[in-house]
Amino acid sequence: MVLAALTTAAVVGASALTMVRPGLGWLVAALAGTAALVTAGVIRSGTSSPVADLTKPAAPGATTGAASARPGATGAPGRVAQAAWAAATVALVAVGTVRAAGWLFVLCLLAAAVTGTLAVTGGRSPLGMLVAATLPPAATVRALPWAVRGVRNTRPAGSGIGFGRILTSLAMSAVLLTLFGLLFSSADAVFADLVSGLLPDISPAGVIGWLMRLLLIGGGLLGGAYLVSRPPDLEGLRPAPARPAHRLEWTLPLVLLDALFSVFVLVQLTVLFGGAGHVLRTAGLTYAQYARGGFWQLLAVTALTLLVIAVAARRAPKATRADRLLVRVLLGTLTALSLVIVASALYRMQVYADAYGATRLRLVVSTVELWLGLLFVLVGVAVVRLRADWLPRLVVGTAVLALLGLALGNPDRLIADRNVDRYLETGRLDVSYLSGLSADAVPALGRLPEPMRSCALGEIAAELPRDGFWATNLGRERARRALDTIPVSGSITDCPGLRRW
Image (cartoon, rainbow, N blue to C red; front, side, top):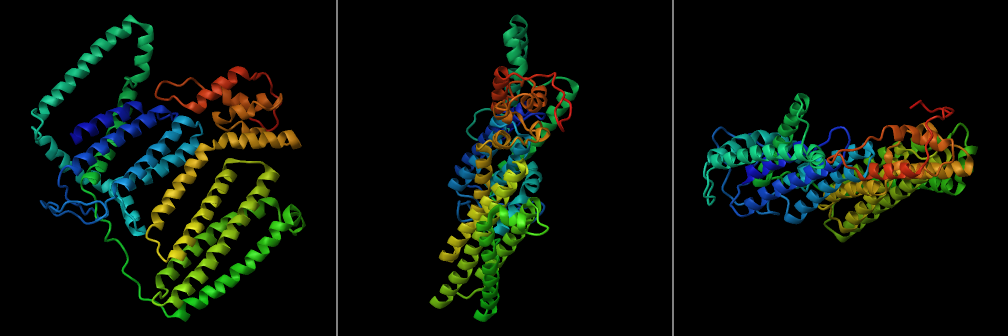
């Protein structure tokens, strides 16, 4: 049953995926793969599934233990966590169906690879989550003999039919569907268009591409099903309890660091109240240097601060009430001061965007800074509770939510709206940059007066072909409808700084 579900999902995914433009096919493939892995999980829950230790090499001929995997007792994710990571994976892939921005879809795919791995492997500690990222390739190799044993089981228990007869039935179904589908297609043009949109390309290059996608998707799903059926034991991948340090050993560095942060925060408060005039009066300082330098410095400060908090929370003694109070005060102060630094960085980016306009990079930077602020809030909660075993999963979860929030906000349209508003107020506009945005920006760019409207929309309109069924995309469809009502002239050539379309 598992192999049949995986094969069906692999065929659906290989047929539905569109490699040129993201669209509905990616969501269908994600749903099919999720359904196949859920099938593997349901079958596992009804049987006694051993726990596989993929972190160690398997001995030749060795089998895993007979202990039953209990969610929560090993590194296997519980049902709630497993469902949450799976839902996040599908939601991230679904961005390609509603947004036309390719750069955003790439970011979502990278995040979906992380959440999908956590859905099938689990891992709660930082070390367990890092090891989990290395397991899927190894699981695919380890799953091959497991799949062979399943194929050799020619009559699965309770099925009443052999595996060979199932393959014969599937082959006969494919032949009959192909024969009658060709006849119906030749009889009706509308039905032929529908079938051609659903079926993959049957040219030599298309068949080779389909087979490559089938192997990649099938291999990934096979490894995922193996991990779901034999969850790895990642619970033991935790560092041993550290020897508590002497109170002076960790208190003095933190007190000095809090003092340094306090001085820096006082300077930042002066900058916040000083506004843009402070930037202009500062010798040798430009908006770009002020904002860009502050962001990268913030990233470095954030990483080091989180490292300091993690080490201090691990080494600081907590045996007495005074020790626990000291930990909360010093680390809580450091966390609160870091939040002010995050606010300062957000202000810097706001000043930068007001001066030079909104771009994708500046919007992503602002999103990252907001996520860092939320991260420090979570760290503050962990410091107050003096427990952080839940923090690693929330770090990844909040990052995924931030990315989904960015996608929900339609970033390319937000960028276009802000730049159009700025142009209507100041008369300044980077037409060349706006013409390189995705189709998501078309409704906002339609508010520009001529000739700027045609300059900004001409290239987008020229690169907006009709989508097939699997490439259906809500953002591109909305752009086509908007372009049907927005007059765009292709004869305008006087566009400052714009390449010809």
